[in-house]
Length: 211
Ligand SMILES: C[S@@+](CC[C@H](N)C(=O)[O-])C[C@H]1O[C@@H](n2cnc3c(N)ncnc32)[C@H](O)[C@@H]1O
Image 1 (cartoon, rainbow, N blue to C red):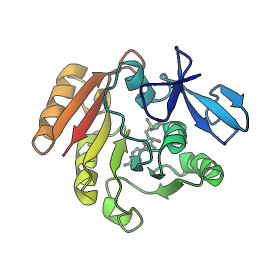
Image 2: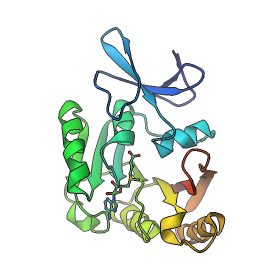
Image 3: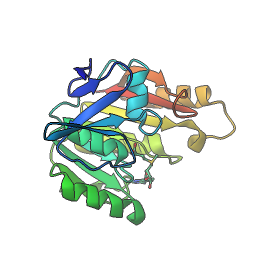
């Protein structure tokens, strides 16, 4: 296993891995023991961030940073980011997913789960202290608006938005929806990268946004 081009991430030349003291597989991913620590395979079919990395993502600012993660689900991507970053506030609306996320957070000190609607960011603004990055993966029609509202509320400089085009508009092509979403974001921010991650996640794009 070697260090990859992404800080805090390792590779065997084929897959990406993060290194953790947690021995337990979080979502069925392969875990390889290395002394008292464990390499967890970061599956690009399960995590959109890993998909973007496999498709040559250039910006990867997560090492030792504080992340506000919107749409945490049961913690698949959160678990890898927790191996790399300083702290993650993980917002999730579903109580069922939250149950699994809570058991992950019990083993990982730097994950702070928040059961909330990401549309109502004022409800968690008191707990979330100066995040460096927002990462959002929410399949809702108003996902762009949710993202921009949180960017404003927390005055964050860098955002990652995983766009699911089909939930915004079923009738237009994914590319057309991506372009429309991009124009909306560019009214306020600059888009550093747009990656079509459909090879791993159908009809999805990854945006890297900066203020
Ligand atoms: C595609 S899944 C996220 C997968 C996860 N990001 C990962 O890579 O491990 C989308 C999640 O967003 C959550 N969600 C949907 N609407 C939401 C909202 N308004 N606020 C917070 N979470 C929401 C869903 O319950 C679901 O768990």
